[in-house]
Image 1 (tube, rainbow, N blue to C red):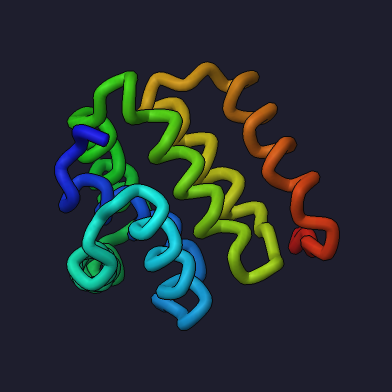
Image 2: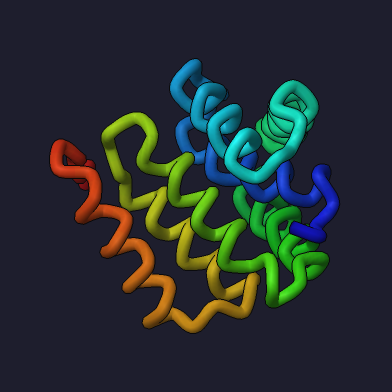
Length: 136
């Protein structure tokens, strides 16, 4: 993956931000993602935490701008990996919320992933989580 670790962490943080805290489950998921991608887990986690703290001080429009700014730095080559990692964060607690789905769809658009492809990727990920709850 060629994307800068700060950009990657910032995009992951927008997913964490949906529920307002960087939970232990999300931290474990970030560590798993880092290991799978050969990234330093401690550094990635620290950068996610810093970005979450930054996001918590922003309103919704500013969060969207933050996400768009970081997504613009991502190559087409890395966009799928980042989107998959964000889905992992969204699903790690076993609950998928409307806010998380909205965030994923906005991020997919910012990453220039076709909406239908993003939906299919999410459906594929969801079907691998048999105990997943949907929160409306």
